[in-house]
Image 1 (spheres, rainbow, N blue to C red):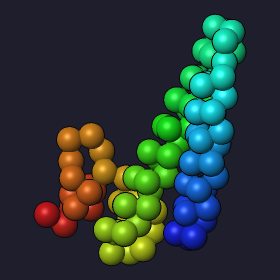
Image 2: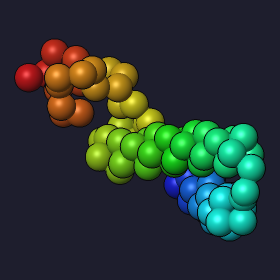
Image 3: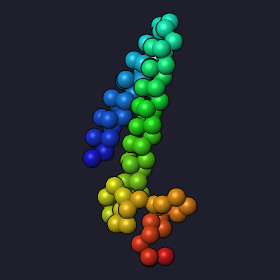
Length: 85
């Protein structure tokens, strides 16, 4: 699955590079705002993908969220709500 994550991150990076070039040439404020919104959305997607990869890398079960699901705000990934404290 990490190959899929790598492909996804590569595609996002390529699109962000294209957007950077378009932003450098953009003269219309509306088009600039549109490009910035797309870049922001892609950056958020990249961050989420990185988090998924990191969770898989630290999850002993190998699943994307572990046996108890994703860690909730305020609890570490080790706590995860399994009751195995």
